[in-house]
Image (cartoon, rainbow, N blue to C red):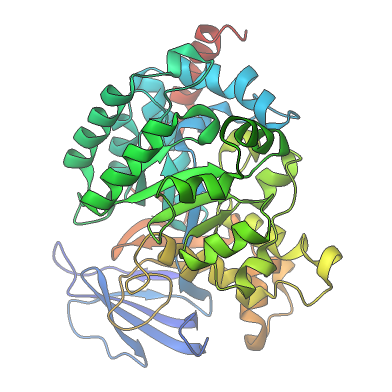
Amino acid sequence: MTVQPYKGLIPLAIIIRNAIIATMNPGRDVLNGDIRIEGSRITEIGQVQPVEGDQLIDAGGRIVAPGLIQSHTHLCQTLFRGLADDLELLDWLKLRIWPLEAAHDTESLYISALLGCAELIRGGTTAIIDMATVHHTTEVFRAASESGIRYLGGKCLMDDCEQKNLVEDREQALAESLDLMDRWHNSCQGRIRYAFCPRFAVSCSEPLLREVAVLAAKYGVAVHTHASENSNEIALVRRRHGMENIEFLENLGLCSESLIVAHCIHVNESEMRILASNRVNVAHCPSSNQKLASGIAMIPEMLARGINVGLGADGAPCNNRLCAFTEMRQAALIQKPRLGPSAMKAEEVLAMCTLGGARAMGMADQLGSLEVGKIADIIMVDNRQLHNQPMELSTVYSQMVYQLNALDVDMTMVDGQILYIDGHLKGLDRQSLISACQRSVKRIYHRAGLD
């Protein structure tokens, strides 16, 4: 890839030339051609004629695709990578994650979030739906804002949990959420948006969840939570409330197209109908679900019912990597032993990680495909490496899902701004970030009493 310098401080436009364009448009067209980006928008696709003042990027036959969207992450947990391996969900939370989250200070949380953003951007993820932790949440927003990633998320809400230093008074927690929403929602020209984030039914009281439903509807913002991830979790909800997880959320008034629910592994037919009829968004996290031995979500059955499904890596401690390419490959492969080799075809999986994520973010008309008028969240991926040969134009979508990986990403662009290109992350000193990570993780591990 060659980048032609331009005169002046700001180019008239950026033109990506000589690309294989995986559009993900309604026709799923794959084109040989160019893309013109003016400001934050795609203005032309095809054979584009540059004018003086344009910045030219020669893709050299690389794949150019919509930015990948991860529908469930925990930036607050990136520093905990490798510190909570080989545990099932509730032990994983109680013995490791909750003590570590409680041990965060403002600096460690900022570094954790910045590390996560850097890894995601480096790997071609341009947008995330995130759940922060209980304290110091503004540091997560600060990191997301500075990194340039597209972000939807908010403060984690927990008012009923045995980890006492994460439990907050309900009204105080909601007041802080509203303050954060006032400060951050639709900031950075709309790149950063707020969501109410009650952790899950096991750590949230019924009054808290009901109030979240009211506030989310009042202010028109999303709700991001977990449900039906683990059989022990489901048994707890059933024992406390006398109903299944998704039934409980519907009873509280939370089920709508503004709800993003991570996992939904153990759902029955009635719950499937609730998800479909209320247009609830499901975030599928296949690697996390396997590592925690939680199970395999019935994603093909959900898609067949018209349920919108996105993909996510979840947090680093239950996955160890934040790679959208890994999640796409896993999402395709894990269904095949159960339903046959044609289950979860590559194009369908890539749609979950682009269009499905865009819909979950409430931005289906703005993101998820390369079309004129849409926001320029774009990645360029090198398909010329040994593990991608022989390369055929007709198999581009399969290449994206089955062959390529995060290290093949050569460029990541959000809002028409290049955040990563040719090994360089904009505004980030890699070695300084690594050093800060080492200092922070030692400090919080000691503070959590886990050393």
